[in-house]
Figure 1 (cartoon, rainbow, N blue to C red):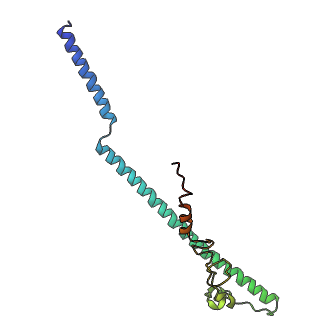
Figure 2: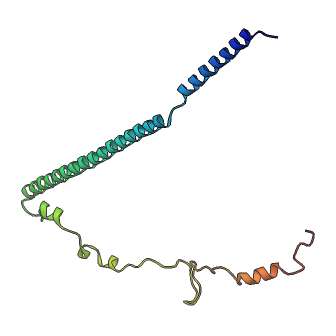
Figure 3: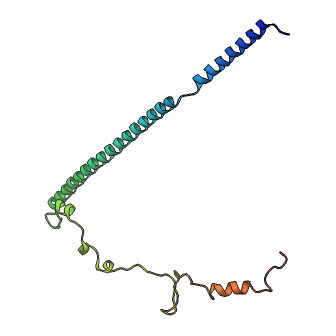
Length: 164
């Protein structure tokens, strides 16, 4: 039989090892508070990232608008230059509309040729022999007989597989 001192030493050693393992596991495991803090910081970083992205998008479209405005002005200037050159070089024999008037006009139905104003897209593409015939977009187009007749024919007693 072991002595009492050995039993006490073994018990103390076991308690020490148990406390050490518990302490190590406690350090490794995050508390709920730590998890909440971590999630809040990740949320803040995600919100900052989204705000940065939105600012980049707004900046991109603002620059695009500026560039398109500048391009429009440059086009107007080039057109005016070409029109003035044509006036001078052709001795006024050609009629060139004013660039500002040309660019500022709003298209209307008068600009659309007459043959395109009342165009109606086709409603059905199937060739028909008579107006009462079903078209290709009809659910029954191409079916010779109603589906119920096909089902009745397939369900006839001599066609059923009786081996099952």
